[in-house]
Image (tube, rainbow, N blue to C red; front, side):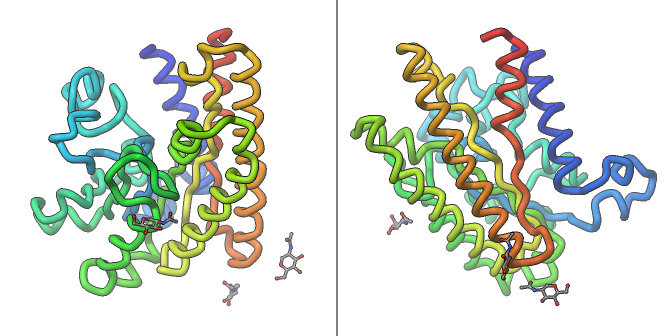
Length: 277
Ligand SMILES: *[C@@H]1O[C@H](CO)[C@@H](O)[C@H](O)[C@H]1NC(C)=O
Ligand SMILES: *[C@@H]1O[C@H](CO)[C@@H](O)[C@H](O)[C@H]1NC(C)=O
Ligand SMILES: *[C@@H]1O[C@H](CO)[C@@H](O)[C@H](O)[C@H]1NC(C)=O
């Protein structure tokens, strides 16, 4: 498991390096300013794939064993035994981990300079079963801080990480059959487009969006017939096709490649195929 995570982590790092910062050679040059093109804040929106601890500690969930046992050594509010994308991206930007929205009033004000995470585990672009803000609500929280905590020039040197890892679909499928999902995929991607457009118009000029990982391999689907696994992965492919179209459209409109897809789907498939599943 550990080597699997390591492989995944290095894949992810590679993808971040090459897509967000351009030429790898530039990244490895000794010039610190060139390296990260002055991007020194990270704002995070989305779900458990990027949430570093916004959910209430009383909710247990990510605040209970065995979460966090590899990193940081105890449950920390991450829905993982170790690091998650937010940790990797902050490390890459050479900044401290952005503070979580829920802790923003408890930390030293200097900590706010690295950005903030508004991501809550279990959420989607639409409402899911959890009692935390959907992505629209998360962007509202961000917007309320603009002008007082963060200035326009802060935002122009920032990166946003926007994760939609499938809670909308899992929630949808908890009450409806797989066959009903096709039109819903379009709605989800349309809502992602609305959210991306809004984050960009609020002033963040570099926005990274993971593609959807092959959900067919999660135990809930993989334990059934192979047909279910394949059907779910096919639908994930459809989601990702639509996502690529949206990002191409947004990049064309904004004309400076503001939006980048991080290929989680390929990274997961590489790991899974190497393991022979
Ligand atoms: C987001 O959450 C709010 C509050 O629950 C709700 O009114 C709104 O319709 C939701 N937005 C979307 C796009 O589902
Ligand atoms: C980009 O946008 C222009 C109009 O703004 C349009 O004419 C052109 O076809 C678009 N290109 C692509 C690849 O979508
Ligand atoms: C496109 O780029 C030009 C030059 O960089 C800039 O002046 C213009 O505002 C940009 N358009 C949009 C829609 O961002």
